[in-house]
Image (tube, rainbow, N blue to C red; front, side, top):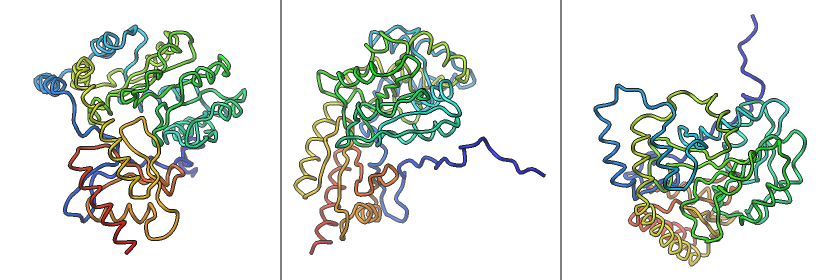
Length: 366
């Protein structure tokens, strides 16, 4: 009897492992691993979510029309060019399913989001990583990797896990160097945290070209990670394709209603951004004073380098913090074994983490 086997490439996938939710065996669990917004969602979003309790027997509106109208209203976009998804993860997966397949190449920068190569392998395509320069996407290296088989280029901007930002003129240069048959996906999950006045998440490029998509999420600054809501802004041609292959009820009704209320509360977004930028600057200073290398970040997290050997390696510090009930994100799976990523969480959580880290580093150097 022939054994049941999946499509070629599936078994080459290393399953994505997110940040741990609890510290096994510890008396407390302080999670600073998944870039969640510890300030929480807008109270208006919570109120909207709770208002759905009597409607749980109803299917959601398939096209998420009200949510798309709210997004369009706030961002000045055409709602017909917005496609919603179960988190931006689904948007990225749908794009890969739609535009890549066996023998195709899916290109991304060296330290880009791990889901890019995972999605590529899932459709039988070949993931291709372009080297970065000082943890920043390098346009010349990306363009050098483009071949006639390159169907999609994923660019996270700001990037996770490095926090780096590619200037928009470089994004334009990347797009200009791509053939019209290659799709450029601008993953702007952390766009709302950027304070650089010259930054753009890519709406201008989407408006000007059919082969550009901007992906966004409600999981980060909006604090709705549990509800899984994301969206794409794209050309009518791409929107038509995505709407043909997405599940008909892919965003639950409570998620749609909460997200619409969240996006309309831009005062809450501003408060979260201001808090995050201030705490990120403070924490970077504290960690630098400990002799650690802290990379510049435009997201709600910091990437921190630890010594490559000795008692204070990233792996050892990670385990020591975990034993104390503090959960950071190890970066070995991204090819950054000497780094840990720290979410800019609640003030008290950051204080506890920093005190524990100082104790660990001091104890190991006595």
